[in-house]
Image (cartoon, rainbow, N blue to C red; front, side):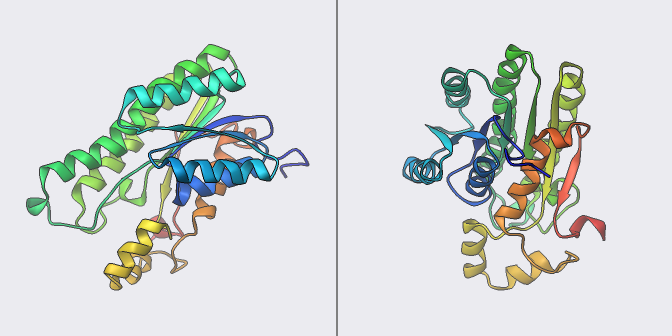
Length: 257
């Protein structure tokens, strides 16, 4: 039980990719559970509308517009959290990018580069800036990185995305091993197909995609973004104090069969 104060009471949490989808759902869930959230993404209007919504509900939210592929942008978000709230306790590194499946030999190099840049370098940039801030206040911290079932096995014909999400899991495990002795827990969410705006647009363009996306899952449906957000909230909370280096599936049973 979270108790009256909430599962994330008094925690300062940075959320990337928070202008829509899983990131926006996480902002609402974390704030409802008592966290002050620092929202960062590229779409300023959406971030500010979400921050206003959270504040109207009595929560604390700050906005830093930026791109996770730019180390300076990530640094500004971390610095803003520390300047505003005095510390950074946790982070949900959720920003990602993918595209519909194309055969490997037909995939443009710039698509490969973009997928790697957002999904891998983005997580690298975030942890590289967040970990010193957590070490700086001496109380440890928690990080959750969004990987995918594509980080566990090959899905479809999106080879760069599969490679990127495997890399996210590798970075997560290596960092967890490196900083566990200093009180920082780091886990990866292995996310199944989720009903985000991007997924809805893809299904509209290719209706058979929904059946393909859900056919392997035991629950035979897409996740709702809030379901992923709740799993992230638990991992970032003190309730998950003995969980680190994990590849935590939130996939409706997809990875079980």
